[in-house]
Length: 248
Image 1 (cartoon, helix red, strand yellow):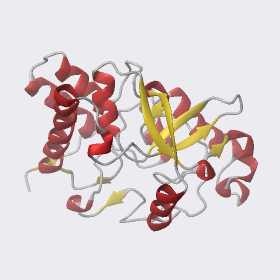
Image 2 (image 1 turned 90 degrees about the horizontal axis):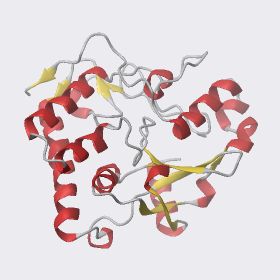
Image 3 (image 1 turned 180 degrees about the horizontal axis):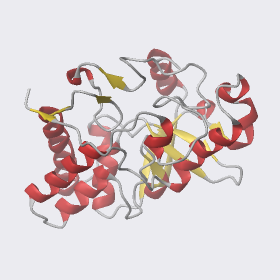
């Protein structure tokens, strides 16, 4: 779905629902509200426990330097039989556009739109990492001082709902990861999310998913990608050569 069509869908077809924070998940299969590895949440939880800021930031940088996936299997911590570019979801009608030498990778680190999901072989701009620090710290400070007020800012977090064969659901976050991390750090167990029912991905429909139906994905691989968002990411360190931190 194009960005423009997605915006239209969320504006006119979206539904709001209160869900468990523990059922929300980052693109890289890092789950929220479960006390497990999630770089955003780990950062805000450590700050809320008065850990030294320098130590918290150093751990976040260390994670970013080691998390450098080049395919979906590495990104989600699952073993796939085929090679699938980053964020080439088996249910996606249109393949994710390549932006450099491979999907999810950019030649210029300044062009990386999100440092947890997109990468550059040249390294990571320190200014982008510091931007993440500001966003995470601002979200935590705002909720701690004023309470959670999504209506005063950018609205409720937007997600895509994934529905398993047993009826359980996960909410794959399109935005709101910083707020969710702060909410989890503050002990919140529920959050209102916005999703479009017509965009739901049902495990029961797996044979009809676009990339499965056209043969791009083996059914077993497609299921492993889907299940990663239910089971979490057990293998976030993907490279033996840490990324370079670039000052400019």
